[in-house]
Length: 624
Image (cartoon, rainbow, N blue to C red; front, side, top):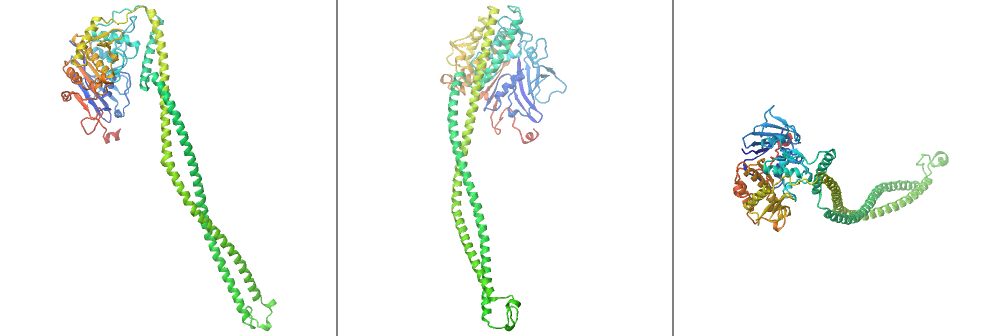
């Protein structure tokens, strides 16, 4: 009986979120449509639910979801659902297929880590379903073996959009220390025979165990650093050139920034000076206006005093003209009048005093008029000069705020971006230095291990006849897909990869690397079914038809060919005991689009299904 698994649905759940579900069926399944709609995230989530340790990407769309369900069935009809937190950790498995509520109190826990001698882990659970539990695989050239983990199978059935174009064999994950185990897993699938009978060629000494642990750690570190280097930038020569260009650009930007900042400071100082002058002028003009008003009142007071004194003088003149009679001041008759004794009023003296006071006030009033005239002239001067200052200030403000300030802000931002980019490039160069040091250390340890291990075989037991059958099947598959100009395919046991018409698979452009990677993975599934050897029964491929979207040069461009149509026709004609899930941005042929197992993500909430995660309605946003 053929053993294998078939994925049925992937579901994200959250307390206040509508479930996000995608369903799968036997045979061909296609998820296609707009970018940034969650298609590649589905691939990552499937791998995560099959024991992957890499954390899920922190997409804003998955906010509020705390649990993932992966429902599957074996080809013998057993149905189960794996449940896991979005944060990772262990699993819980339930009998039956669930996408909504899980049965309360049911299920059993599974550890995430594969452990020898312990069956309560997700790896052993899955391996049992496909008849590969307790299998042994070779882990190094001297013949040491480990229990098979489902993670070794995962890289041959789940291929993301980055892996599918890498310039390495599908049997390598970038960690040479693990390559022996990867090839051994490949051999197990091709032959159905594990490495249980293999006996190590030398005793496991403490030194060898220590070296093996160091090699494993170095391999993981090298893989991590390679990932970081890939994310940051290109090869060292390119980075050095980029750093030189950045230094030149930063120097030029610094000079321009210095000139602009100097001009800005000069104009800002001029504006401060003008504002000071304007403030002083307005203050002095206000003071002049206030003084003018007060001096005007004083002038009126002087005029009033002069009028009063002139009235006294005129009255004295009239008294003198009246002749002899009673005194107008004391009332005494003339013959009895004694000015010195009885009357204080001396009309002549009073008149003389009034005239003297009038003369004094006239002098003060004349001085006051001169002062008022000087203040008026000063005020007129301020009134003429202040508008000119205000006009110059307006021009300066326009130049500073409208031109210089935005330009300076842009220059500073550009300078900061260049400095940040320079820091990233220097960090990448530093990573390369560290990576080279790690690789040198690994090479040295491998050399020591090789000397101690002698001439142990490195082909992990792959026979020429087996890999020839596999290569012939891939050839027929590529021909059926109408891969351009293909006539010969063989498997190179040294590089552990396909050679197509005498050309290494990794030497093709990224588009053809993607489609040949798909040929390797789907060909392996076909081989295992044709020769009745074990296989998980499904494959998940992200962007195998990259040549239709991002061709890497003319030779890599398949947009004028019918490979797209032939590719889908071939897979859709495969038997139901094979399941192929394709993730693509380009549209499949119309007949594939019409299939119930083809799902399009439109990227538009008004048309069809926008993406994997449903859009949040206002109530969900409020509750979330």
